[in-house]
Image (cartoon, rainbow, N blue to C red; front, side, top):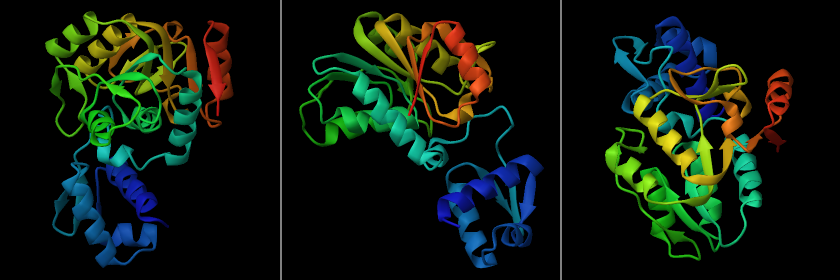
Length: 253
């Protein structure tokens, strides 16, 4: 079992049960207790759980968003394929608004090698696009980054979006379904997503199969706001069919 897989299993176990001992987690993962203690220290530093004597307890409520550092190691292959599919839909010369999130960060990694104009809505993507000069033109919005997440929110971000118009907005989401639409965990993040969608001529939503059928706390809008949804093969067929019946083009990669 890889470190990332073990961390995911530990996180899920602690979150589902509220807590677990080092001995329990060692038995579950097949790793040594020394390795589990080291894993718990790493996850505690990421804000996923709290170390307690002999084990750990969760810091995440069921409706809360897992930290960026943890999500960055989840569904990596699917995110890379989705990013490639989205990049292929964007033409050279386009102006692109790029949402925050781990999948959109992979899109940024591909777009930095393209002659496009990109305004990212996260510190991670801004750093990625700005650290090495390339053919992509970087536009930096105002805003206040969410702690440990890097997503830009607040009145300065909304003002930046209101002042500009983009060819394409690439939007991430925390949950989506034909019934409940696009949703996010954070109210300020949802407000930014709404403004981002309103600022673009075309909207591409990036979502791996785990987001389908899930509804988060803050409503962004109906799925019909998306012209194209790029996902992976794990997306539930029933949800895909329902979204297509609403007029959204679903592209599986």
